[in-house]
Length: 140
Image (cartoon, rainbow, N blue to C red; front, top):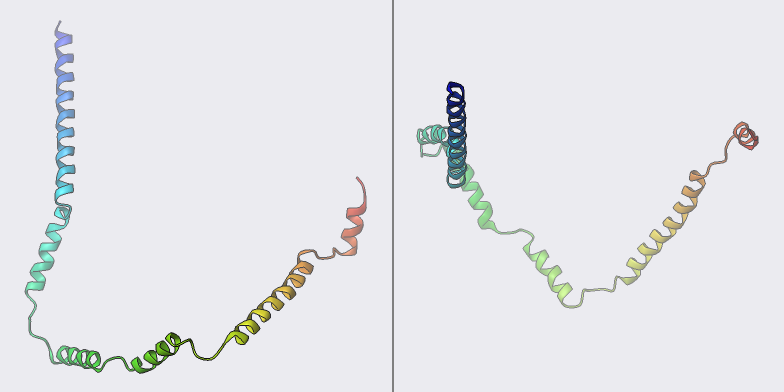
């Protein structure tokens, strides 16, 4: 009788440990879903403390750099007039007829394609040396 009691106690403590582990995993999953940044909160806190110690005043070089960026932005796009001219030409019909130039380029590509097929065909099927030809022609 004593042995069965110990078995029951061991089984109940194992099931209790399993329940606790399951509850803990469930809590971790819930916490991870609601606060995914919690694992990095210590690192982020240190980073924010270091940033808080920085001076909010800009140095002379930083002020100059920001001033130059502002001046460049306010100057506008130096190519705006050319972009507008191209857009107006295209919207008005596209300018001169460029069909012959496009057709000529297409013909050149087609001609090169035909020549490359002939060249690659001869490379793919090389003529074997005489010794190999005689070896292949023998029957075993």
